[in-house]
Image 1 (cartoon, rainbow, N blue to C red):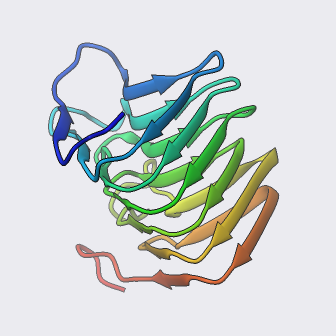
Image 2 (image 1 turned 180 degrees about the horizontal axis):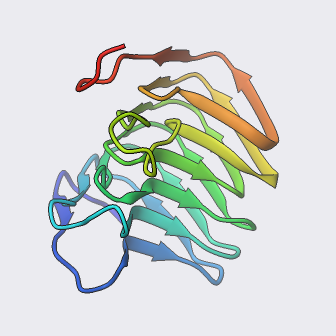
Image 3 (image 1 turned 90 degrees about the vertical axis):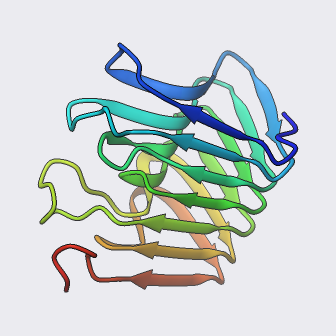
Length: 178
C-alpha cells in the first residue's frame, strides 16, 4: 500500500470493535509512502476497542514509514500483533492509542517513535505501557527508536524481548502531572 502522502481516517462506526486495517489468513502487506492513518475516536467510549492495524493468524505487516494515530479514548492499540503473526517496522510515528504496540506474535523494530499518554489516574480501566510484549510465545526485537510513555515506556511481562539501543522515557501525565 503506497500511501503517497495521503491520510486515511476512520470515523463513526456501529460496531464495538473497530480496526482500520485487519490482516489475517496469510496476508502479506507493506505500508510505504509516508502517509497518515488516524482513528478518530471522538465517538468511542471506554467499552469499545480501536485499532489502526490488527494482525491475525499467519499475517505479515511491514511498515516502512508514516504516522499512525490510534484511538486514545477507547481500549485498544495502534497495532495489535496477534499470535502467529509477524510485524516489521523500519520507521514511523505511532501515537495516541491506549497502547502503541501490543505484541503477541513476532515483532522486529528497527527505528521509529512510539508515544503513549494513557495513565491509570485518568482512567483506571484503560491504560497501558506504550509498547507491550504480552504472550508467552511473543518475540520482540527492538533496534533503536524512541519510546515515550506516561504509564511506562516498555513492558515485557511474557515472551522474549531483546533490546539493542534506543531511548526510553516515562513522562508525567498531561492532566495529573507526576
